[in-house]
Amino acid sequence: MQFRTQLPASKNSLPIKIGDRFITLGSCFANSMDEKLKSSKFETLNNPLGILYDPRSIARVLNFALTGNRPDNQTYINTGNEVVNLLAHSNMNGNSIEDSKAKINTQLSKLRIALKEANWLIITLGTSWVYYQNSTGLQVANCHKIAQKEFTKELLAFERTKLVYDNLLEFLKEVNPSLQVIITVSPVRHTKDSLPLNSLSKSHLFLLSHYLDQTYKQVSYYPAYELLIDDLRDYRFYKQDMIHPTAQAVEYIWQHFLHSYVEDETLKVLAEWNALQKAINHKPFDANSEKHQKFILSTIAKLEKISIKINVVKEIELLKKQICYN
Image (cartoon, rainbow, N blue to C red; front, side):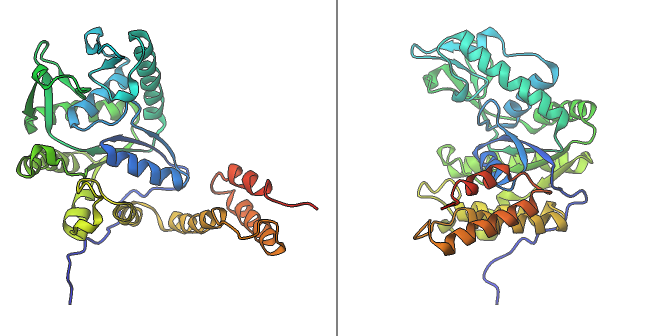
């Protein structure tokens, strides 16, 4: 008897391989994916301008990187304590306009280079609700705790967002024809909008994701939202805020992702690396004991063997420092 509906992994036609490079953009769930990718020894660039929640803001950052354009001066605001940019996360705040501009320009330059070299772009869509600055009509990415009366909240229409992504994907293809785009809807719930309005918001993201998945060969949809909401479907997989997934839930989604996108040979390497990570993080009762010293040497030998496939130079150096030579 089954007590839940499981979502089986199905292999993507183009698999992820060792050495592939990633860019992760979007909501805080993009950060979770980035952490998993980094721990699996993939090279990644994550949210260069900080967390972005809506599809228009994500596309705008990508367009800045692709075109070389930069945010206008009017998008910078001095709040009294610091300078913020309405098109970026608070990570890009500075002590002056020049300081904030320098941060943003540096990060967009990194993104431009990464877009030319990356194999995969993961876009995690968080919400369709956006805010427009009343004085300028600018759709902002972040209100930076500025008084709500300065903004008007609206729902992004699918048709307008569709046109933005049609242009973006054509541009991405010109810059990097081999770039594969994985689009997903974040399982993080925006309960401040209310549950009904959160569902409405997500539905617009599903429309956009489905359209892109069906229209463009380089785009595939990954069901992260469905895995948490429909497969796991239990509040024990949410943190105390009842909004964000627990580490266990993220790990479940990550394992499903691996078996959906990663080729079998790479899965074997990652399994071997995962076992070695546990060995590296092992805390001995007596670090100088003969038994533990043999364990260190054995682990170093295994790391040297796997080093032809992944970069483990730092890990080998770390363990060598623990060797007792007396």
